[in-house]
Image (cartoon, rainbow, N blue to C red; front, side, top):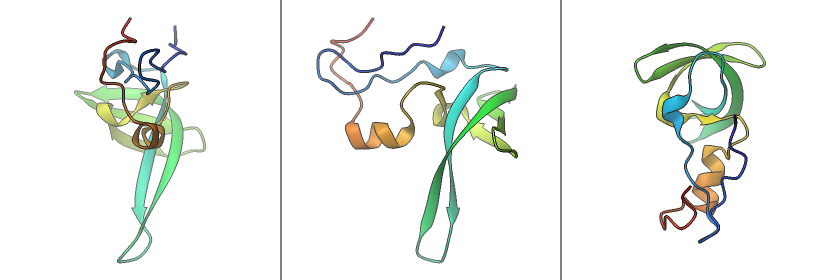
Length: 99
């Protein structure tokens, strides 16, 4: 079952999802960063299905095609806030909203 309430009741920031339970067949969100010139980069949010694992690295088949090797700590489950949301809104460290 996918957790849908990631916002902490105590501080209002987002709780980190438990990525240790992500496995083959799960849908995840991740980002891909590519250089556009010698001074800039482009980061794109992607969604895909985990097709295999190798330690803490996941092989993800993108929804729009392509395969990506992504570190387990760099993905979030489908339905969870993505990395950009965590960087803009912050990560809960208060423990008030812990389940």
